[in-house]
Amino acid sequence: MPGPVVIAGGGLAALRTAENLRRFGHAGPITIVGDEPWLPYDRPPLSKAALVGDSAEPAPLRSGEALADQGIEVIRGVRATRLDGENKRLVLSDGARLPFEHLVVATGVRARALPAIHPALPVLTLRTWEDSRKVRDAVLAAAHVTVVGAGFLGLEIASAARSLGRSVTVVEAGSAPLWALGPTVAERVTALHRRHGVGLRLGRRITGAEPEAGRFTVTLDDGEALPTDVVVGAIGGVPNVEWLAGSGLDAAAGVPCDETGATPVEGVHAVGDVASIAGHGRTEHWNHAVATAVVVGHNIARPDAPPRRLSDVPYFWSDQHGSKLQCLGTPAPSDDLRVLRDDEHGFLAVYTRDGIVTGVAALDMPLALNRCRPHVNTAFDATAIGAIVA
Image (cartoon, rainbow, N blue to C red; front, side, top):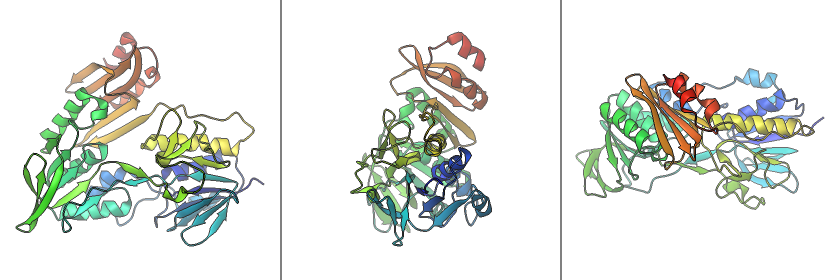
């Protein structure tokens, strides 16, 4: 019988890796180790539906019975503390040592903390279910919410807070929201949020905060004073890799691996947000977690078959104020942007570099965007893509 596979991390990438191991024929033991008390659940709703809902716990992606039927064991409420690569053991926070033939690192990322602003001012971040409950409770108790960071997460939190009737200001150090998608898309996103009453302070940073009349006044670096009740930080993630110190993996920027998911340490693989893939780096998106889980699950379960390599076209989406923003590929802000549709029905644009399509961005045009998928990484064909959005 094949040896045991241990998966460090209890999120989507961990679950999908376990399921793909079974799908591709692995018959040995599979154990998922997660530090949260829940079975694996979906994170995208945490900044959307979960912030406006009242559920007491997250809905599991699979029930305990379904996991047991697949022979997948889930150990909850403990975390990986050390990789003993020489003896092929994973050391856990409760002192247990799990033997493995293959270890899959799926420990993901944690929210990057904001610098201290004022010891009494609530400053929250959002990554886990418990975080989402704290943010929701704070937003419901607030009249004004300040969000720091105008990436996808920060803008989704702002959207959710506005849907709850709160006044919202987003403070962003960069010159535009979602700056990585270029100025044209940033303009559309800026307009969307301003139409829904979100205040945007772009190119600004918080420099301090002082109590005032039962709330706080946040000061920006241009001297503007913003009365607020709570600050929510959304300034990126930090890979959960400290426990890999001394393992032989240089994982400061994420767990290094090739396109097959294999790391330099024999028998150790990486999936999801924490994986730093040669030529790609780290990608913190739902579809990336799913794609890497397929690759690693296949390669562990079928060692005699040609290895699979990550080849999926990156895809991500964001729901804001009832609109859906989607993007395919890996565009750069400096790529040429060809706007193919921009009217009351939606927005769609194609990024190109040296005549090759590097990405597609769309607002409220999901079907058209999906039909553009085969054109990513191919020569731009104005006639073919134009027909898609006509």
